[in-house]
Structures are given as structure tokens and as C-alpha cells.
Amino acid sequence: MNKLKVVDLFAGVGGLSQGFISKGFEIEFAIEHNKQIAKSYQLNHPTTTVYDEDISVMDLKELKSIHSTIDVIIGGPLCQGFSQKGKRMSIDDDRNFLFKKFVETVEIFKPKYFVLENVPNILTTANGFFKDEIIKGFEELGYVVNAKTLNAADFGVPQNRKRAFL
Image 1 (cartoon, rainbow, N blue to C red):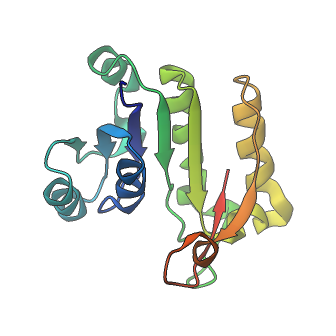
Image 2 (cartoon, rainbow, N blue to C red):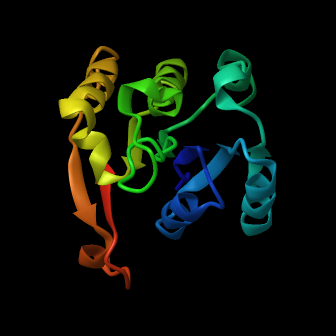
């Protein structure tokens, strides 16, 4: 049976990718802007193509011509603006709008599924503005979206870590 092909956006060192790999998925490519972190991703996933570029300036249509069949898009756009730590500048923080690149990537690649994960505050910041905008963006593309905060400990991970999933 063919493995479902996955793209990991805002990939970090590849933890989310590793979870998908452990369930039989194949990571087609990953995008991680921070070059040192991208290098760590590549060491963790030597068979995956890693783009160490800023997704906000990448030509996603050109990527689609290289990687034509993608089944799932996963990733966690930057969370610093939503996190309980730090300044939390909300709608005045450009990083909080990187979800739009995630939506655009889904629009271009048209995967069967997507999983966007982030800190729980992404669902409540600015009175739910970002949650509503994210859901609206995906629903306009024809996707049905569920949004929920889950605790990793409830899924066998030995840590109490809550994350929002859409």
C-alpha cells in the first residue's frame, strides 16, 4: 500500500513529522525558515527534502510543480504571538497572520487532510478572531474544520502538554 504523502510547514526539528512517520506516513518535504533548526530537521529526517526558506516569500506554485501529489499538510505556524509567555501583541503581531500561508498552501496543494497545531490561545486570542479567520479560510476552500485543545498525556505522551488542533 502506498504511504500518504505529507508536507510539514513551520516544521521545527520535525517532531510533528516524526509522529506522522510513526503512523506510516511519508514526509515529502518540510519548510523551516530558521536555517539552524532546518539543519536539525534534516539530521532527524535525512530522506526528506527540507526547504530552509521563509514561507512568506516562497513560490508555492513552483513547489507544487515539483511535489505534485500531497495527501496531508501539517504544521504549526509561529505561536509566540499567542503564547502566554512574551508580549502577546495579538492583531498587531505579523507572526500571528502566518496561518494565511498555511491556508494558501492548502489551497494550492489541495490535500485530502490538514492538521494545524498551535498553543491553545490561538483559539481564544482577540476574542476568537484568529480561530474564526482560520476556520473561515479553510471552509472557503471546502474543508470541514474541527478545532479542539488536546492534552498529549491523553494520547500516551509522557508529558502534560496542551495544544490546539484544527
